Image 1 (cartoon, protein in one colour):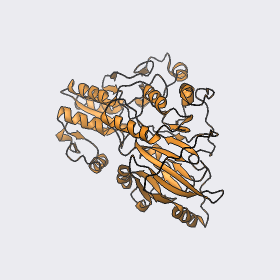
Image 2: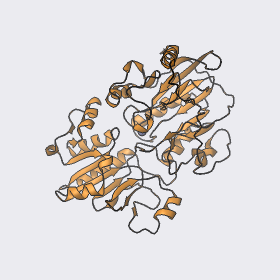
Image 3: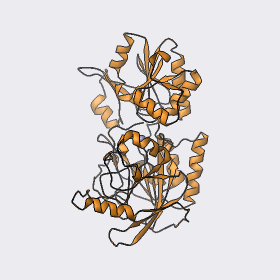
Image 4: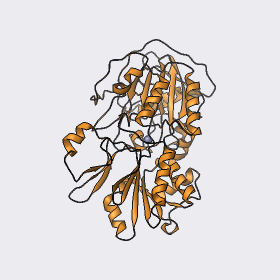
Length: 436
Ligand SMILES: [Zn+2]
């Protein structure tokens, strides 16, 4: 796809149309209440939550996409000035409220951008998403798959969320005289909390901003900000620490539960014990942590199929809103892309999905090296690479581009382009808070 047409989850460059997969902060870097570069395409639920995260945002820029329907936009080629029609569909990503994948097709071929996604085999919702994707593809080849590679390592294995949710319930039920705190993010894991509430017939405490989000999502009765009404509290993940648990236990017996696909560990420091999750690698284990008896990992290989008692006050449960390694593998086998790029990178390690799954691609690609250093050149297939222009004519330029976007809500026919295309570097997200 030509540069300057669309951006997905990237907000600092210049494009004519912007696509937002979901509202986690690692996908909205550069987006702000004053951002006004062009139209933003997102799901209806993301649009509903959007003003809560960006209160002063010009909501007239939002374009709501109906999940499972083809849409099209007509853009202008920056190089030739010719019309460029792009067809796209949003598909449920089963990640957090409002999260979608985007399937694009046009003269450039067919691109699938998963955003963050969970690809479970079970649940009716997962089956619907699968059939929606298969119907949309209609046997067309995906030229480039932009993949959520958060757990693109065989050691990352965890159960379906409904299994993990029951594990959390079992832990809570086995501590009838304890208060319980559960570490969560500002969005996501609502189904876990709902399951706990339904099975144990108990309300869940959340902090005031989270209660507002719950109300926006339509959960009015289950959640409360009154601590006297429940012994189960969902707290911001950043506040979940051994120090916090020890402080709470000085007043009342309290157990902490961390739902996550990450291998969590306890790292003592001078001031306090930190609990943190990390995409650990063999290199990290050997060079940094091996032999340090004060550091505990839940399992040597990071697997978390069963709850782990990480600390006398803390359990970790493998409840994740990202796909496990084996789910990623199943997804790639289903899609059979010609090529693929990981969208999640971090400063400590990056696993190129081609390393493990290149053999599953339609075109036999040379296997790439693990933890390959990513060149952050702004030449992505989907996102626009040039720096934003803040000159005098910038507003005029934005307005021109905004007007050049025309959304057609009618169904369109597939226009498959089978020619092999040169693959350039993929869209990457610098992931420093990695919600899971
Ligand atoms: Zn996310």
